[in-house]
Length: 382
Image (tube, rainbow, N blue to C red; front, side):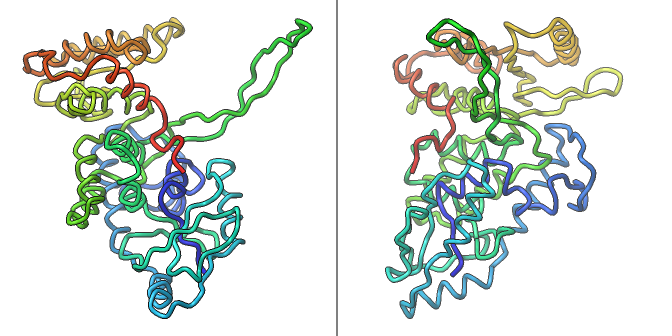
């Protein structure tokens, strides 16, 4: 029988690069037609990019696969429909280390449970509805769609982490295992080069795998359930279009409500295009259009090359000349809650909101939230 991948395993699929083509005609698409096109750089924040992500997501929300009928029949008659071991192995092979074992799958009845270290089976006595799953290239494999895997995890993740997962799925970055050469010193004092494999975030997606509008659609469609309500709340604070995990962490820390450890500021638009002099445009990492305020995250502030520092300075000067009040965040703001407090106060005033410390959670709780948001949303979830 088909393997129906759900929850955290589906989230692992969509937040890495290896399953991207299941959602799109190719790894690079024409923004107007969705047809395969040569690899190219798409301007971040481009309204056409957001619209294309919305079109693709909503087209998916109305697709019902034939396998859903088989699942519904098995729910009714109790026949054993065990997930295919071969399909699960193919999923693991394609994931290249980014999909952990055991894979979380749903089955229609107890007789369909598979006793294998490859899978963790959950009996769910309701057939997959429209938009719930996406067919993978591997035979016998359906993966919960980005929107439905969020719904499935809504009661497993705290609201801030759920908002982070939504933001990851609506971003242009993904996670991948990369090799990094490091110089290590042995017990005898001899230095040698050693290659280590580690997880890294890369920003090369021409179109995000989902959008906030599609997330909101699924959440509201299940508004009578606790999971739907939790998802809807998280969507309110999630951002779309972030180009790095640290951009996501910074935006969420600023906009999450104070009662969960955030600063309660209005949610920014991420990587937003603004016009500057001479008919040119520049992209601002986080932008509040109503206030004309922007925030740039400079991860290389302490070790950038001179040419990059010069280029960034020129770009910021152009943005500021276009009547945008621009602030800068560095790695310090994501490692020091005191520095982040000061930045939040400055932004609050720039947004026309008096800064008040009343209602902020204690420093220790804000630090804990910041640490959480700097990790992957599904880290440690099984």
